[in-house]
Image (cartoon, one colour):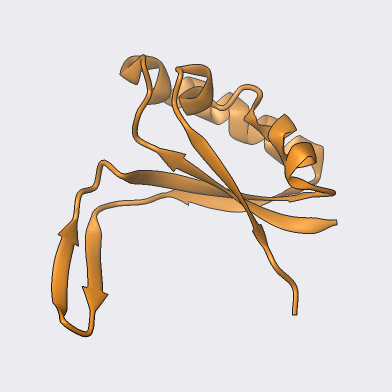
Length: 100
């Protein structure tokens, strides 16, 4: 199994559905029951820092992440089912965490 991060972007067509705490609770419980859920969190605003200066990031770019174990990125897509942001028409980016 490989480790994947599901990054949730703030672009849902239905913001009320994407922010529904009851739906999130059911979704997280289903992930836990899968045995392949390794945590996650919402993400607040922050700053992006470079050698030439600091730029404030809008809190609306990236709203959260979920870490799962899957055989492939295709396999990790199954964890989008029931994700309130995804089901509300939002974008979820799936990235593998490479092993060294």
